[in-house]
Length: 116
Length: 116
DNA sequence: TTAATATATGAATAACCGTTCATATATTAG
DNA sequence: CTAATATATGAACGGTTATTCATATATTAA
Image 1 (cartoon, each protein chain N blue to C red):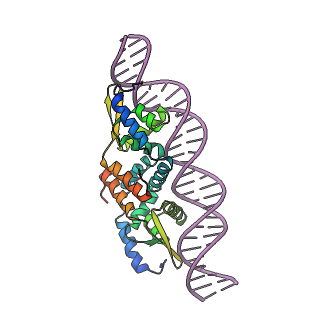
Image 2 (cartoon, rainbow over the protein chains, first blue to last red):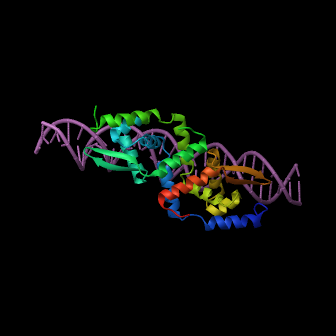
Image 3 (spheres, rainbow over the protein chains, first blue to last red):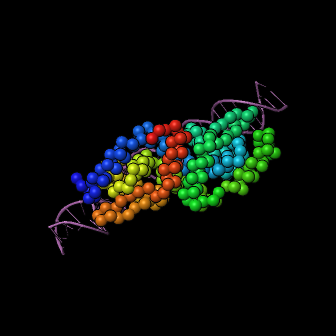
């Protein structure tokens, strides 16, 4: 069928697109990663951690909300390797996992014409 | 209070973090943007459009699912300026909105050690 | 104009997800 | 050991969201 009158041109694009479509597993991992950084509360945590590592109570103080809610959010961020944790005595100290995190936030801000 | 025994050091970080926390409105816009690209079906559409503009039926053919579902997804991607649309006769032809989109996908793949 | 094609959209349902509350675990102090 | 502090976690509730189904709109052909 010729859906749009330019089948010959588009057929090639469809074929290329199908051939280069990431595997289901990679799509799922990408999806999970973007989901992890797509909630306002989790974004605030990431922005907070730009300035250095912090223990949970300081994160709570910075971003607001209850300790429990923040802890749940930290869990999701950590499960998706957006942040890393290390124990320091009684505290767990969190920090950004790698340089990609800030880079993605900056690109997104560029897309939105945000200054931050 | 001294929650973690390094109040002097952390107080500065908390203050900086609060001071540089993006405004609520910017957090919301970032959140919406990441949400838009965080669903598997929408990610597939973005990956599909890497290879050139496509009309709806070709997108459906490439990514699967029903025409209605794809159309709803296109709407969300467009509302968040991930893709743009133009009419070409009977068809609406979609393409990626700007260069940031692919750049973000590539960064995310780097984060996940994905090849795509 | 009428019929056909391409795309969009409103409503409804089901699955998903963030928060809260209560409680559990882990570390340190006494 | 016990008490206190810091953090994590399970269950439940409420809100959000992706999909489906039916239908609407817009363009072209006849």
